[in-house]
Length: 235
Image (cartoon, rainbow, N blue to C red; front, side, top):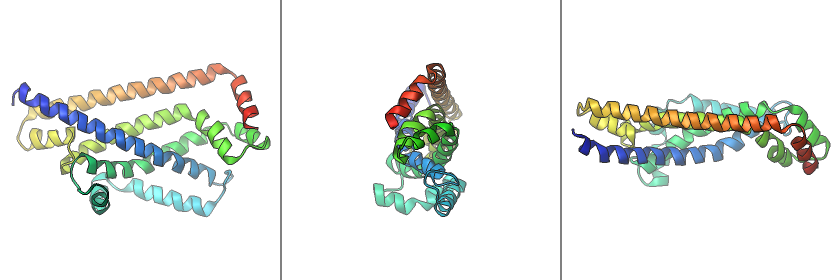
C-alpha cells in the first residue's frame, strides 16, 4: 500500500479517534467529578457522612472498574443500541468508552480531593459555609492541579480503549491497525498507526503535565492572601 493510499485512511482514523476520545472525556468528567466528590463527602468524617451510601457507591465503582473493556463493550451492546441505534461505528463506541471512564476518573477525583488541606474546609465550615460552598470554593479549586493530571491520565487511558474498540468495528486508529495492518498484512501501516498513537499520547501527557505544574506553581506563589479572601467570600 502506497502513502497516497494510506494518507486518507490515517487522516480519517485520527479524526475518528479524537472524536471518540474527546466526547468520552467530556462525559467522563461530567459524571466522574461529582461521583468522586460524593465518595469523599459521604465517607467517615465527611461533610455528608453516610457510610452505607459510601459503601454502595464505592462497590459500584469498583465493579465497573474491574470489568475488562472488551467485556464491557459486549455487556453494554443493548444499552448502546438503545442510545445510538447501532453497536458499531464511532458514535456507538463513545457509550462504552464513557461508561468505562466514569468510575476510573471518579477514583482519581477522590484521591485528588482527599489531598486538600482539611484546615481550609474546617475554616469555611466554621464561618457558616454550606457544603456546596465548600465544594465550589475549596475542594475543586484547591485540587485543580491534581484534577488536571487525572484528566490527562483518563485521556491517555481512553486512547488505549479507543484503539481496543477498533477491533470490533468502532473505527479510529485501532480499526486501521487491525483491519489493514494485521488482517491484510500491511505491517508498515500498522506501525505507522502505533507511531501516531505514541505521538498523540506524548503530546497530551506533556500538555497535561505542563498545565498541572503551572497551576501548582501559581497556587504555591500566591501565598495565603487569596485563601483568606476565599474564606471571606465564602462566609
